[in-house]
Length: 221
Image (cartoon, helix red, strand yellow):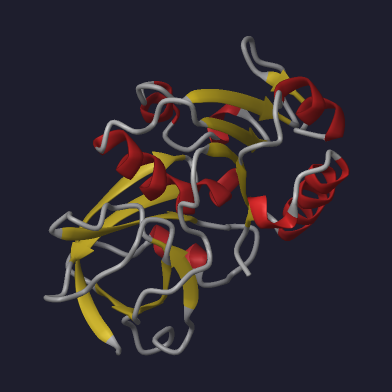
């Protein structure tokens, strides 16, 4: 079902990531990790739908989307730079393959963090975050989404990797097979993977090479 929701607020998260809060329609429901097809309610863009995950919690009275603006091409996400509160998004029913399947390690690349945000926030709110780990890869420290919040999540162990910058306390490079072998102590857990397509393919391949069963790897389908 199609719904129009007013944008209540817009806040800058990083140099190219925005957080939008919108109205929440009566009866609208979703699970942490799910997404919706979202469009900007403008004449030239109302037919340009893209999937975005909810970063709010199911019990919140608003919806939240954390969206990266890709400015290297004149696409839909570039338009989020000039969207302002008071305008509307067009959303559909919630859907998505990423959901919480048990204690484990979350592996995210860039904006691939967003489906995990609601899951991690939900676990923290329930006091069930202890024992989980996040491996978060980015190009530079300035690209890290909500680092302060992630570092402050009680019970969550966070490892950062930067591919284009050296920074104290963060791994230089990527979470490649050697890094995974160093970090992961047991494959008897669930692995959640989200990010650019090639990163996800490589990560899934590396996990399988380590002996991780397909059923223990959660990705978007």
